[in-house]
Image 1 (cartoon, rainbow, N blue to C red):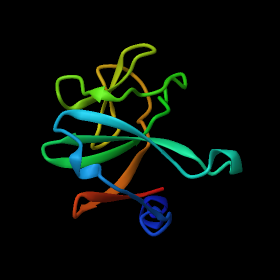
Image 2: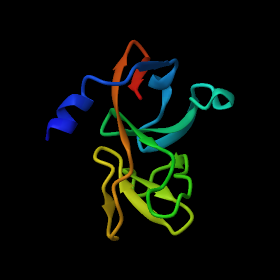
Image 3: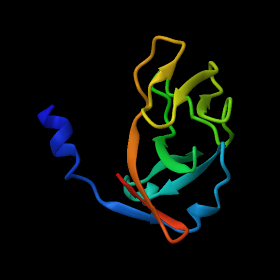
Image 4: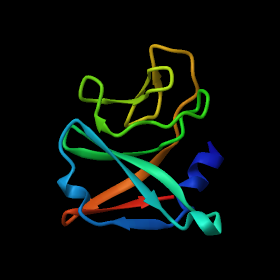
Length: 117
């Protein structure tokens, strides 16, 4: 519990411009940071029920990449490696025994969003 509480105060927000244009029920992969400096990562932004959510694009099952495009049933992110589905708001795997996908805090405002890494 303490680790989770402290995690709320860590990280830094990264501005993603134009995120407000993401359609309902879709996901878009965004590259953040500098991969050459070892500080880069890929995040999958998803819009469900009018709200933006962010997941790490690495599937916790076997390291596949969670895909962008239409969400499964309009609300589940998919790893095409084994067709695992993840709830975008919590990162929990749906219908399979698998760890949660890493999620990030998102704040949307004025057509842009901030994601805390």
